Amino acid sequence: MFENRTDLALEERESFEGNGGEIGGVALREWRCHGSSIRMTEVSILNEKGAESMGKPMGTYLTMEDPGLSETEDAYCEAVAGELGRQLASLIRKNCASTMAGLSILVAGLGNRQVTPDSLGPRVVDGLSMRTEPGRRNGTYLYTAEKAGRTVHPVLSGIHPGVMAQTGMETAEIVRGVVRESRPDLVIAVDALAARNVHRLASTIQLTDTGIHPGSGVGNHRRGMTRENLGVPVIAIGVPTVVGAAAIVHGTVNALVRTLTASKEGSRYGEYIRELDSDSQYELIRELLEPEFGAMFVTPQDMDERICKLSAAIAEGIRRAVERLEEER
Image 1 (cartoon, rainbow, N blue to C red):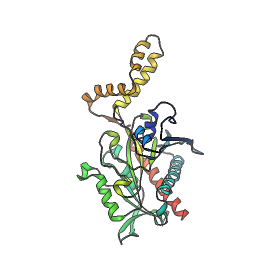
Image 2 (image 1 turned 90 degrees about the vertical axis):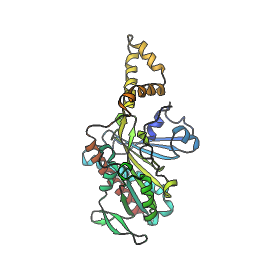
Image 3 (image 1 turned 90 degrees about the horizontal axis):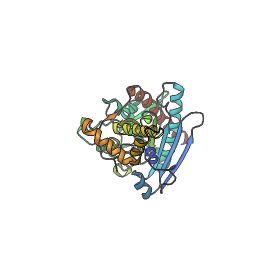
Image 4 (image 1 turned 180 degrees about the vertical axis):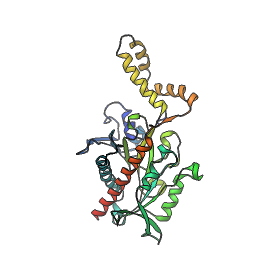
């Protein structure tokens, strides 16, 4: 079996035949958001059987999809932030039911600010417009977000811990130290992801309550940030910003097969390639590409602008979620 090179549960579900309902221990729900073109998909991994089939931990994986997610229009960013705020607030209620009264949230912006496709997390934390103010716990100081000149509660703190190449330390260890000292009730980890499908780059947002394993989508496995490792629930927000070169070629080969089999002259060659299963096709492509070029990953030329717009929308979505929870108190 070839290595996934994707962080999206939605793409993992799509690798199975049928509509996804045939996978034991996995539930699928899809809907369109009212008043917008955003499509939502919820993949719920219900038991160990489903986790083994999907290669992902049990939990809820929500995916927002729309080719216009990185558009510049204010109205569109408003729709993205609004829907993200609704879905995030729902996940927080589900995972923090016993601590909602005095909820404290730490936002961890993962990634490398100096590398554009990996800068989403730090930019989201920057976009939260935080300021120092006495915290509620142990007399420490927490970063508390402001909105329209007023403090937004629950208490919202933030950190962008850098990457191991910059600090010499595992990112998860840094975050665990901050969690141990500031004792938040919840961690929201924001990170760039890897996808299989080039059309999902900067046009998809995934939310999950299973935590995150930084770098897993690009084969750079680091220690995970999960409830088990940090001692508090972890909700991850991610956007795919890179796709493997082999995955792009694999998709091109599939398109070539469809074209060849549609004509008499090319049908024999198309049938030969199609007889190879998807794993064999992908592995063959990797064997051809990686000795020559290494494990190459590709990102769009305008990713800097897309990251700028998406990070602003995600930061606003987090603020919306916090405000919703405050209004319910």
